[in-house]
Image (cartoon, rainbow, N blue to C red; front, side):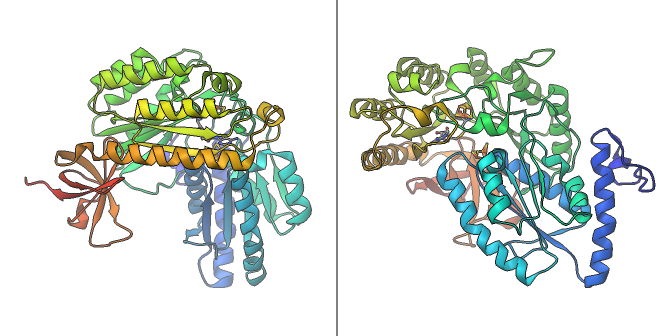
Length: 484
Ligand code: SAH
Ligand code: SF4
Ligand code: F3S
């Protein structure tokens, strides 16, 4: 797409809106921008926006796209929720994610009463559920627009529709094959960026709502990904995080299939790019080719997030994970043999329907054998519409809670030991920010994803530097800038 279009110079607001994307959205961005300009004159101040993100990195990336569109329209970003345009980008992976959103909506209503110019938009995974949309339509009438995960690119068009209508705009797509390229996106960090390589998920793990709210798996063309990364690097980015629910099945359904490992090899060649991360890897699809590419790479970080979910083959079967305890352990072993310095991290669900004490002990055993650098542990949450929600033998809350506490203790003990294994060595970090707790320190990240706090000049932010890892403090290090 031409850069002219990005600058709106190609947009003729006197003609009808184009039908094709992304041109259509640039038309609506230009149109909304005219409205924002008029409004600013009327109010004699800029119009502000705030995007509040719940959920995973996929949502965080979507929020950057929403922010990109809003900035193009002329809104100015602010922290907090006292803004003229507030978007909640929601998550529904566990019940407590939904509860948090409802809890905060009341507060938004109060803010809107004080600011008659305020618009409220709800989007993201939770909005893909009919029951949620019904509830908001009936009980949260102050909301201006609701859209889902498949049409966030349409934000400008939805705002335009809202401006000429008096009622709540609801636009939810059930699924889509569409991938709209070349839309604006606002990065949180200037030196690192998330890059979608695929959308949706086809795995249907029996507990998980994601395939229902994110639709079927769709991979972006490798050329589009390479082009985006090249542009990011030209704009100062040195580290990218490739995003997908199951990156290991990237490219399989493209017209010209390509493996994830082959995509990585292509990205490795981009000059100026220093670090490549990715998530998430599904153990069932992790290939020998990927291990080989990682092992030989100078840029792919020494970190693999490899969600195990449970250590019991019986439970894994009911979860529809398509691997066994033994095959997972073998895989972890193979990865460690190829890359002894790698960090493995994981996700674990406790209290899946039918989980017995013996099943749980197998999970503990896997944790002890694999020795994760960190693990996200979750209490099983029933998601209506998923197969697990109607399974027999749902585990009692008190039992699940007790197992959860035991798991957490084991995980934390091992994580502390694992993180500390690099104490005393000199390593490269990417300096990310001023430490939020102690502003005399900077914070950087090791290749294996551990954090290091150290004293140094602020202009190191965004740079790769060597530090000595003087002291491990459980889950992070204190370091010192290395000489030279
Ligand atoms: N695609 C990624 C995970 C996406 S959801 C993967 O397959 O690993 C992130 C994590 O949330 C999952 O790994 C799982 O551990 C957890 N999760 C998903 N559904 C859940 C549920 N119903 N209850 C509790 N945890 C859940
Ligand atoms: Fe959910 Fe499984 Fe897909 Fe991950 S792979 S998003 S856990 S269905
Ligand atoms: Fe992510 Fe939550 Fe959606 S985990 S994909 S934001 S349901």
